Length: 166
Image 1 (cartoon, rainbow, N blue to C red):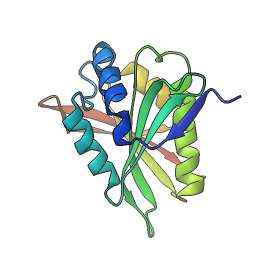
Image 2: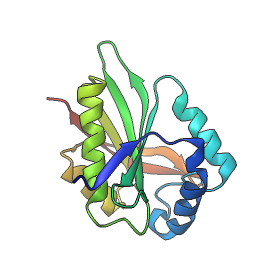
Image 3: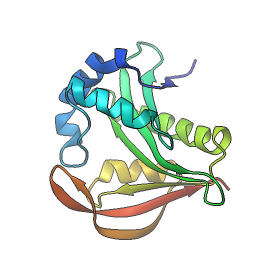
């Protein structure tokens, strides 16, 4: 029996999602600022419904609890066939290998289902858990981007990691 299931988020997920975000504040720390209110979750759903975006919830198969989120954004087809990838886990399901299973499943969907060639994840250098997850899933470091992304009101450095379909 599979340990996780991938599915798209829906408006019905708002209460569980917001609760999971609030319970995961220590886990997320300065690394990520996911939607922590119902209105912000609704705005997130709208962004993910726009062309070039796709969101996945990773859910435990045995009890339907939220494990984490993987977002594909700025999906470009044509000659590039690429997307940016963002992810975060939820407590108490972090540290059990479930995010690894979920991220690998999303990568399979991106490469086989969407027929992308490249996924790029930008990760803050101090985020050891996120870097380890990228490594476990086969991503390779390609570079460093100073002051790349504004998170929690501050521009943060990021390492560029990529995974190719081949």
